[in-house]
Image (cartoon, rainbow, N blue to C red):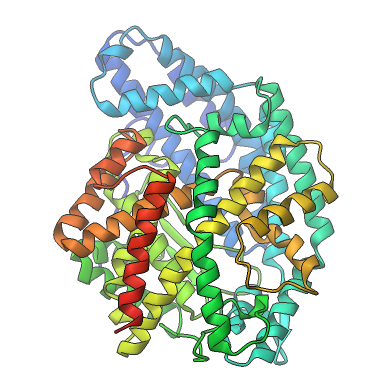
Length: 572
């Protein structure tokens, strides 16, 4: 049974344990006060800094993992809060000092590894926007975000006499029984709606805190601050607006065609929101696996058919118990792959029931996991911490590459064809949703003093612009107005969402390459991943032999390819 171990520590003691800030401070003081006499000393300094930061990153990771796996356990909440309140404020202050020390070093220009150039531009931007007075605000923001997790993680509804989690309730939306679909959709919507005022209050506080952070740092709004904080050197808000326009023009019309066909097949006089996930041919929902273990078994086999090394990664994670995949009451919502900086073996968290969506989530997070393994041996943590536009290219490409081997999950040829069609149609659905969420966030932070009513109106208008014109929301408008509250990124990861759209476009290109030549297409994918963050986004996409381009022309070309693939599948 293969289990990986972390590299031997050089700077920190092998048995180092974080109990308080006082255990950590001497190591930061060492880095702050150390003489950097030449290029070699500077390189050693960066390696020691990386070791310290990797240890703290992994320590924080496990606290977050434990908390999200069981939001009802107060001890996990307290352990997480301890790090946020007692450790992070100090590391933020010292981090700024270390950035300045490195940037002032006369030997900085002698570093030849291309990863340093990328890292240094990020350090310069971090120094530029750092403000001491923002540290307690960031702490407040992180703690406020956990309130959202606790509310969402505790939501359940009763269906067929059984109390079920929200992810489990969502599986009823694929039922062939329209009455049951409506019941499930209504109960889910009403449960969320019952918490709308609490969630509005949490978000209002987050918005105010974030706006203050931006103001303190000298920015006009939080959006502009976040573009700097997230290191968005390769595109601007104007490019995001171009993406929104391109999706509205090139993708939304395809949604209308798709939902018009669904309405006709269902024989529905009016297509309602609870019909969105129903099979147009009135077949029961696909069930690609039985339980969490079955999901992992089949994922191993699927990845083995792509490349045995990818399957090995999943086995290592299973051996090390780095999975928590099944939905249960008390788990935080969503799914994630959390990189563990010291050991280099990530942790995958999700809320699986037995749906196709869960399969897609598994291979998506599996793509992130592959990325973590592929950058594991890069020497400096900054080289391994890729920008989200690249991280999501890894995950979304794996969704489509793995789709070529979903026969592992679907032995029946008709089910396999149907699964592929549903996933490709989901891409047509998700791109407008990404544009909706991103455009909404631009509006929110461009209008930091908005009222709840103004926010609701803004969401409704943006939602309508990117939605199909077939679905009838009559009588359910109040629920539509609050659909933004189900998107955890708005609460927990502001402005981290358009990356999914950019990466989805790149992933379609990777998949197209893989279909033409599996060996060459996979190699390009892995070449891009192995760069970590040692090159620009455009250069990394180029290594995968795809474009970092979200113009209307490129989106239209890629949508045409998806349309062709759908036609082939539908006519088989």
